[in-house]
Length: 158
Image 1 (tube, rainbow, N blue to C red):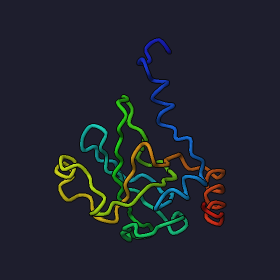
Image 2: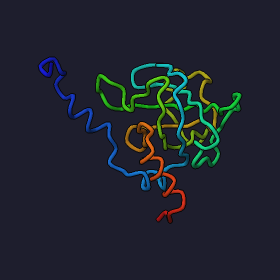
Image 3: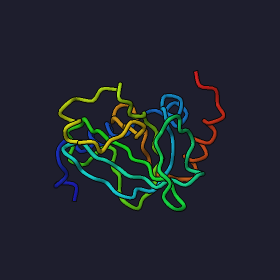
Image 4: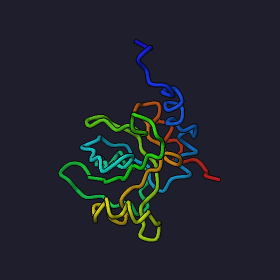
């Protein structure tokens, strides 16, 4: 089974796992939440627009994150940019799965390349989330990680 693995798969898996822990990531991010992946639009190589459904308890840190009420949940749009040249997207979002996500907020003044803005064609609004593979935190939700993020909320950021 292992002989069909693509060369560099181990390197890709390692590069995709950020070494920052929950507290470091929480302090470095503009938003932190946990939510269920509603859908993933692949807009191009390494460019995905992810929609998460988040309940009130899943909003750890918002700042000016744009959220839309959607029944019981809030809908959050996040642009995930993957600069790696790996076969599997990094981070990987599977519809129906719950993730803890920390990243930055897209502002008009936070410039994205013109070519990328043309691909997005107005689908990204100021206040939507922005994940870059190097500076974001995306991990599957579990109680231990949730507890560590809850602890980070009350910790002193340096």
